[in-house]
Amino acid sequence: MARETFEPAYLTLLRSGELRQRVQIAAERVRSCDLCGRACQVDRYEQLGSCRTGTQAVVSSYGPHLVVDIYMPDVKYADAETAYRYSRVRDYVAVNRAAVKEMHRQVGDLTLDERSIALRGLLVRHLVLPEGLAGTAEAARFLAEEVSPNTYVNVMDQYRPC
Image (tube, rainbow, N blue to C red; front, side, top):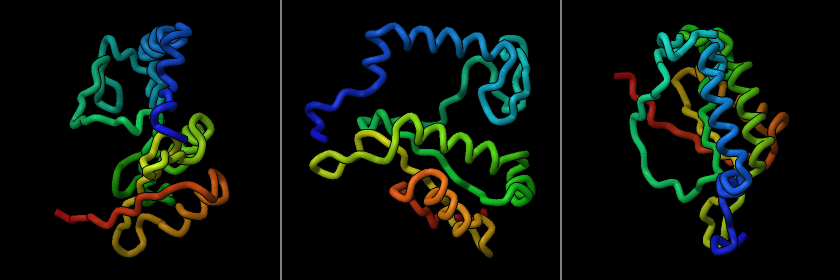
């Protein structure tokens, strides 16, 4: 796919009016919030959700993403008990896997332009942890068998036990 002919999906949604509709739906969903895997049902206009976010999320960093139609989720753990023990997140594996599958359904495998720059698709980040805690083999098996054998994975080794 050539970058010159590539058009980000949000522009199509903007022109059709669907982007505005999606914003309105999301704004209403925070009144009984189910936007993350915790599904706390809190009215985030009145109080913080279990994610400690109100109606305005805090952005920790940002930068240009030209690679616009790209999802880059983390797959941190392949075992629910490990996820709860180290990150205090219930149902992490089930929620994470459902989200990754949905992301792939929306954008498909990673598509590159003629210079090998990503334009659209799924790129999964996976942090390798000591003693196999991340379940790297199981995470890779899930991606290959339940998402796509063509899934790009950024294997990160920068774990620092500070």
